[in-house]
Image (cartoon, rainbow, N blue to C red; front, side):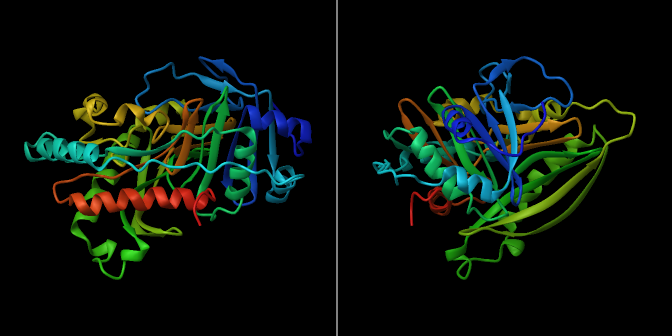
Length: 360
């Protein structure tokens, strides 16, 4: 499927009803216009969207769009321009439940203290009964055009359900025979940076980060030679993270399936558990975890035989006909403090609302 460089208003209307978008780099947007066709397999180089849920409880099919566009910031701004500014009802949020998080926190610490686990990542959600109309999707996209270049804007929606956000975390990127990813774990809200130990000097945050680096590196070693660089500080509008760059060189003669590698990586210790071989099926039985749906799951697009990007679908809003939700997760290790982790969860959700224009 050849990429088109301009989208007509009628196609954009269809796109708002059934579509997907990705900003893989500044001033470059991939727009996939639906309706989508679900396929069990895709040919090399075919434009395809891959977005299973976190626990892969459904069929991990690919979505094939009707049309594919590559446009600029200004192109997308023009498509989103208001004719009449819409009056949208606010999405009134029900705060996340601290008691359910406390149950998860204690359950995970018990497994850690027994030596079964080193780390696990529970999720909590704020919920709203507000409906995500195509007009609201357009309004959120207008806000996301302004998202910092350190964030990858992504989203997909069809038949009244979808996901839209801006994540700092790459699960896997392919450019030719080079694979790139990152370990992103260890967080400090900017507003607390002056009061807390520096991230690079914090034993708890460095330990959590190191588990993720080890997990990803070991998984990628079966594909090729792995090199790491870091950790360093990634600065976002409201948060600071520890980040290590990870690169894998594929042998020239090796057959490689990008999305199969994404399946192998998911979930990294940044969103799942460490050690990986403990498994994470038990995580479903903790409060709220079955509601993850696409939160923290692989979300990726391939658009040529040697160019693809798969993100970790965090920092987003999810919706279905029953309402909307915003989730946040945190890594629990032996040194974790319940009060501090709860504050971090709240700050992450606030950062999502800010980038989506849902909070000033």
